[in-house]
Amino acid sequence: MRTGVFLFGGVEMDDAGAGSPNPLDRRSTNAEMWRATEQILEAGVAADRLGYDSFWLTEHHFQHEAYEVVPNGLLLGAILAERAKRIRIGMMFNITPQWHPLRFAEDFATLHNISGGRGILGVGRGTVPRESQVLGSAVGSHDNPDQADADRRNRAMFDEGMQVINLSLNNEQFSFHGEVYDFPPAGIPDRGGFVDKLTLVPRPLHPYETWQAITSPPSLEAVPRSGWGGVFWNKNHVFMRQWWEKFAEFYADEHGEELAPGEKRTLVLTTCVEDTYEEAVESVRPGHDEFWKFLGPYGWSAGYMGDDGKPAPAGLIPTLEQSIEQRTCIVGSPDDVAEHIAGFRDDMGVENLVVFPVMAGDTYAKAEHQMARLAEEVLPQLA
Image 1 (cartoon, rainbow, N blue to C red):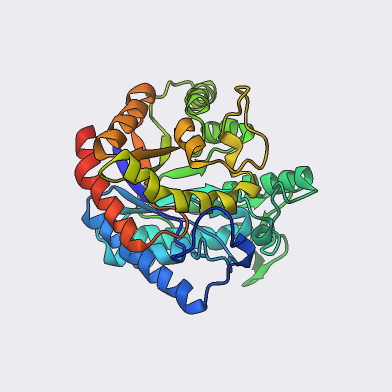
Image 2: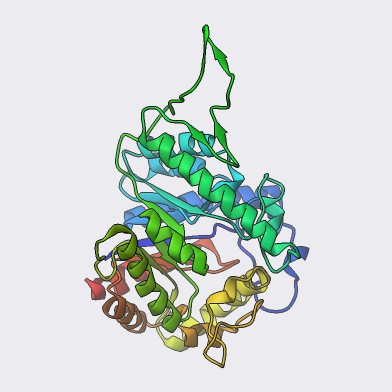
């Protein structure tokens, strides 16, 4: 089982938890946000030293609240690739509708090549209107009254953008003419002729994997049919198993071949390891509650199960006890956490696991402590 680490990359907070302050009232200084960026890189080096297979960053913009302060994971990943010599580097996720697709492809190829083939292409459609609408895209959220139209526009940009990215990365010459993107546009003069094909420079020198977030029924169908891997997170364990198997069914329908039980799927689990269950609950509660106070209004709890066995109502802000019951948050002693992870592995055939070992506002000292306990006390039990 390949095991990676995913960090949001935020500023440390000494007042994380439920209640005040309101997330929008938070204002971190520029120096604090830059220090967090340096600490993220240090955490990546630590993950490499501890033997993890992969380290995942994320992409967010304009977050004065400072929960996530990495606007360009490709650039930061290239820096990390020079400092950490073995670990693979991915993004959960690059929001491709917010990028010019050809600039994105160039940057990913640069990261992939400079790392010697350790880049992982992680892509998603986004969740935050503040980011997407400023950067030329759109996204549906519970804050957005025009959610359906925004979602349709976002999907169109994502689908065509990914076609452009794949064509440019995988072909010596390419062209694409769609409703959103037109490359090259007609009539560009060049040395007595006109441009009708483009060549991306550089292109990847090594094979690469593509992974997309699975957060909605349309993506559950689209990702396996595209042949990419799917990433599953923050979903009730019953729903998780159902979607995990549905992914394989859609893949088989499209490609005519059966996937192994865990093939082309990644499970992300929030974890906290302490000497006892009680200590782990106490340790994780402030960050858990801060995490959901911030992200619940964006619809992140859509994968939780309500009391009626159906998806939870939109905008749920779950308690820690609910997250533990839903098995989205795995906490306890090393033996407890290993037992729960083994349960997912044995039930679903998990081959790719990513742990989310610290929550919103947690310190980077805690991040390294958690990564070490997982690597030294939990993962060996799963070998």
